[in-house]
Length: 121
Image 1 (cartoon, rainbow, N blue to C red):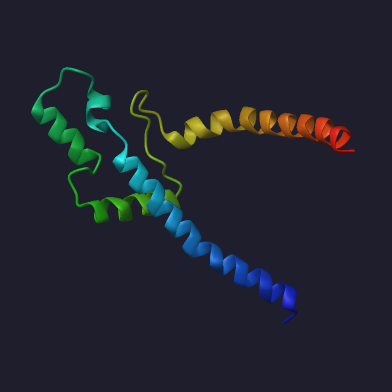
Image 2 (tube, helix red, strand yellow; image 1 turned 135 degrees about the vertical axis):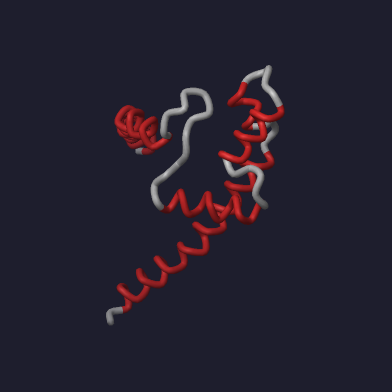
């Protein structure tokens, strides 16, 4: 096998532990962030029973390791969950906003290149 293919394959395999480490980091940051997702979803006035039911539905009553495994499994299947406010699937919300985001990215990169090259020369 040519060395470039072997190098590319090795680099691709090295991305797996990096992505796994980043997923642990993101999951930890989400759980360390202040605030309670149950309170955010239910508002200011809610009963303890409603909070317990929602906490169970969201899987927040499980151990942190089980929550991570469920979260990672859902992430790998393309299930990003639901928005706490609108209760719409996040995959739908992301797909609605992705074209505008890509357009802004391409335009800003084009503008940066148009400005940076003459300034660099």
